[in-house]
Length: 408
Ligand code: PLP
Image 1 (cartoon, rainbow, N blue to C red):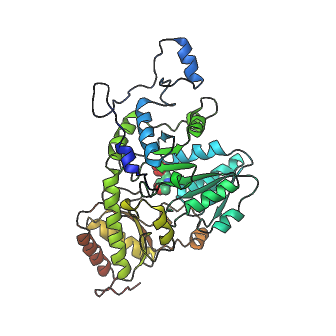
Image 2: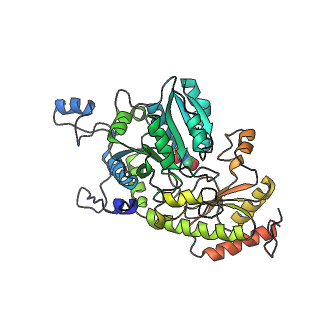
Image 3: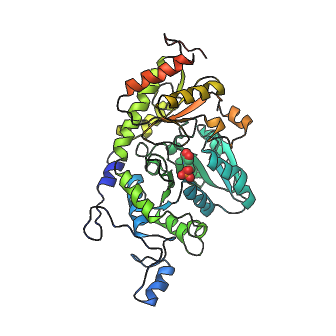
């Protein structure tokens, strides 16, 4: 990992707009002219560098963002899409067909879980869900039909950490593609450097950071991205989850401050996690020594970006969780909203929101308790002030006593 710094890689890219602008010009066209009919034919065949065909295939603005995200993840190239699900679903459908099998972490984003559990079986693709932290369980689930190992670096919402190097070794041994959703840990973790074949992000979250758009990206080899975009057989080209050029230009501008934001998200989340754990609340944060994967995560991260901005607190019951979230919102401590990576803290009870696709008995089995609140910690300037305000809310609701004894 020594000489690889994802933020420097983004910084080192140089772009000029059409008139020498410091931002690349936005391509405001769905289709492109050709001086010769032969060039158009060659472009359809996919063998003309530097020519654009039609913006569902690619556009200059999208290619700028592709290049920056590929530089960030250390992959040959990338393909942006209209949403995170617009990156995940074509990637998996490109890799798997009828009769194929996927081994997936059981603690993943609810939409991805629903896609694998309910949708892909209609196409004859089966998935086995496993505890991704147990490498022997992962390997035992592999069958001759398995094509893909799928996980999130830091899982949604339980913040389990996948040992990407260990999983990459298993994937190599069995000739599988390791696909990693790195949405929770951009810059902090570089999965491709640890052996992942394909890295996915929902750009909706930290990378864009302003909760004003959805977006996604698949970072991979040139060969795989070409296959996704193939006009005859590419899942991205044919299913059409294309990002709009105006949006990709705006995500690109936000990407430039990601390193500063991630450091602040991580600093604030670690601060609150330490304080609430000390107060006796059940706190899960990968930067705490008490986190079961803290040691392995420490070996995986690019340390200057920290352990990320996601933290969970268990306040005992759903009723208490709901009361606390409503009170915190009324005190302007953040928003009762799904999603993550915003400048304000966002909080939700995953069992009834982002993970509600997961049946109750499976939620219990994976440790998703109904008093669990998922926090995406914001960029607050004075985090001690935030801590004191949150603590006052908890004392008002008798979740914490004034002497910091937990009451749940
Ligand atoms: N991956 C993770 C880890 C997520 O949390 C989400 C959304 O919450 C997604 C993927 C899907 O992204 P999008 O909502 O941009 O489609």
